[in-house]
Length: 277
Image: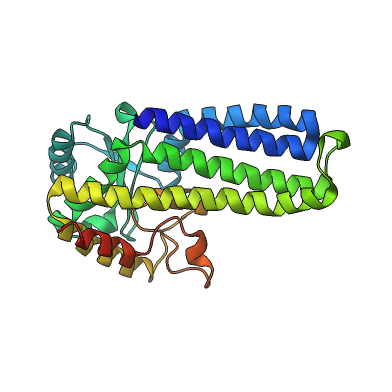
């Protein structure tokens, strides 16, 4: 069922992208958008995980190099009936973590050195359980596809504003076109954010049930939230902020930041976890 939901979302977002391309460039724009969408989905599906791990200089680890972390993950994967994911440590003092990968057999979990130093073993277990819940429900692939298509729609909107299209008979009137070029990128971003936020709540609940201790994740989220307001993760990128357990840009932004945030507020997440006790 989770695979079906993932593929349905990929197809739906791709169709929106192609439709928007047809509005901007008519039949030729639709064809170009279709080719681009196929290429982006192919790349996101097969290579986005390695790209993000490489970007954050993630170092692969084994049981011999990080036995404590490895044993926590091993215990949780057995409990959740998942294969053992690849494990990575990111050489960064800012505490955070993310999961990536297109399916169970190609999953990876990465944590920063700062997270391992800041959190207790129980809190680390809760964070890992959260990331494995994402893996269980294919959340990271869904988030990657949504972010990729949202960014592409924004790119198309900018292209249309700058250059317009040629097949005028296939396009709506200019006023509608301008409105769509403004509204569609915003709508695509909001869809991406909504998907990401709902998946965070689901992963929090999954972690609480997997560990049997919602309070462990509550405590971890409080610590991570506090630190994220002080320092930003090195080389953090908005396009992959949705992957992290805590938004790495919490300490950056203005009053509109929460509207376009990839995560619910930490207070909302802690409140929902409280209801599980």
